[in-house]
Length: 466
Image 1 (cartoon, helix red, strand yellow):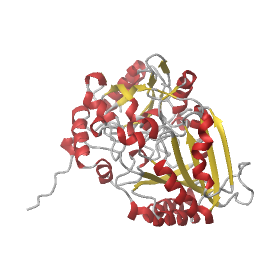
Image 2: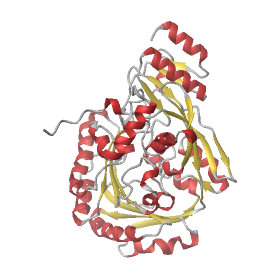
Image 3: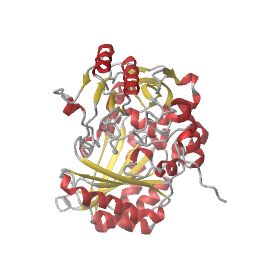
Image 4: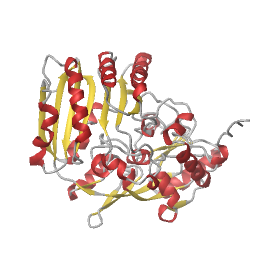
């Protein structure tokens, strides 16, 4: 990167260009996961598609690697790398809604909260994640589980079209590139910088929310009941669980605060007055120590997880799909909860299927749609000195469940994995198709700071069987 090239770039760029010497650089480089404090060579704070295009061309001309920051929420910290050009979309957060067509157009730096704020006043929403400060781009490109997934499908299933800046600096619309659209629906950030998402919206209204807490000694019976309930619940219900250290919320009994517990939550998406009856079978058979229920706006539901995953804490995540919630699996969950190392950590799990599996396999790159359960050990702590014990706890939790794994993993949760793991996630056929699309749109693998799929020409040659 020469001084002249940088000067030319800054002159044609519409937004701020930050170097390590700039006062706002230190704060701007920070992302959600505090484990990843890295030093990009340049932070290009884009305000338009033209800025993104200029940043890509500058990085290529300078021979610098590229990272892309939407919300910066990926647990693996892929939005930032030492010595790279960070293409920062966080200033591009406009959302427009076409109520009649039930479509939203969202810029690449939007957070889920931006999308919900624009859509819910119209009684509409796009199925998305459960923390409102998550970036829309990363979530969508990797899949997008959330409260509406069993009823309507994943976020990526609602991606109608996109505007994309490619590795050569050109700008394309996916209407004329159907293979690119297919890859963007679950293939991650491998193919370009998405500057605009066009998303299908669904009608939503108030939801009935019911949560219960159980002491660890009752967790086995409650989880067995959850298994029965979840596997026969209607599409208007979504029940999830978490094993963690109980907090100080007023509805939590004093005797359980600060102790490992199980919490179960049921959300009813149909007529609110039917919510209690619809969820009662989960909580009546094994009574929780305490519970709380009420009807709330959908946007409030979407923000309930915000306080539990603040910016700047240290995070390490291990996740897998589970084939079943067997007695052995339940025992492993209880053991891991009893061994939890940080009061901020949690083991989250939920039954999937429903509309997730209704999408024909050929319509998106997203794999493993038939997986019954997903389970995630989310270690969270503050002190860097506690990194080893918390990382070990997350890994040990997955090891306890390995015998009952369904196969594959959710690409948005991959962290600290060998390169071969990405192929395992997608499976050989889907991975090969994605590598071919990568070859067409990014043959030099410019967009590699991610859960990377190298272009076909860069794939390792299989060993001969002879």
